[in-house]
Image 1 (cartoon, helix red, strand yellow):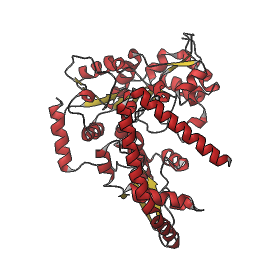
Image 2 (cartoon, rainbow, N blue to C red):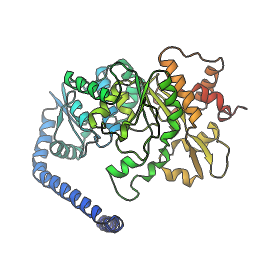
Image 3 (cartoon, one colour):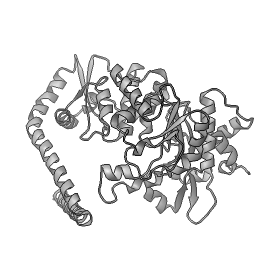
Image 4 (tube, rainbow, N blue to C red):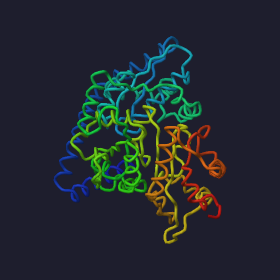
Length: 442
């Protein structure tokens, strides 16, 4: 009875929410919800016919298990970060001999209900066995209701944290090549598009991206749905001193994104606001990320595309603190600064770790703790980009104190923040300019 009451209460709350959404957003929201309801009904009708066959199929999986293990997985295709890097880690882990069953196996995937990038889906079909969602999802659901269902689940990094940790600790991305590749005709098309954007063939370019709330709000609309991510937002114009310097060093800088809050204000012809240009497309999102010299971002999902292609990552305004410490030795980052609201003093890393604020993943967590985040200053971004550019071309000259400051940061950093050896580096100039964060006097 309590379960029935709970379900009725949840249904009533959902109905009230839909009603309030339509009142707030009007006819457009009503049409969107109606279309979504029709889509769900279409899937449910398919499932109605598919589930009996799924039950028989799952029983067959168990009958043939002594000779062949069939495993199922659902790709998180609705979010480009998960969609790009997690399948890559999975395939690289298999290449390195991780999570192989002790007998022949067959892995079957499905895309999720929504797809964030259709070019990426097309490319994953070249390396993964992808079946229709309406076939795989009922199999996945039915399998989950049986004991021992884990044997028939692919150790995907979204679902199996132990597999993710094993892949990262064994540095599988550095030991393998990307499983994403372009056909000859796609390469030809990509370079033509680059030329049309003003990036001549052979010109070095970097990609940069600043996270804001517009993409999620427009792609998956609904009042307040994604505000818990807002603490990760940055101002794209804070990147300008850094990318201006890169253009003086012979690079073209390409601003990435598909739905962005602000147009880039720059008259520099070597700074391309691709995100707001007619050249933006699913295909070029992937092609640009795959061929850049490095990817400068605030740690948003789109950076994972270039990571899957083994491009170096330069991350500014990282939050929460230390979220990608062990991914790659070419990874450079500087975090956002933490302050108590109303207090202009930056919190030290010891204070942040002691209060567990480095584990806050929602905007409300910071508000409840009376904290605010300060995004990376333009001069700190500039210093990090200069360090990255010089490191990647072998011209970086460290100062005597750099190793000591780096080691002090990692000594303060709790062990539970990383899955294996620490490979990333925090910006050298950042630590020199902010010694107070390490409990050192300036």
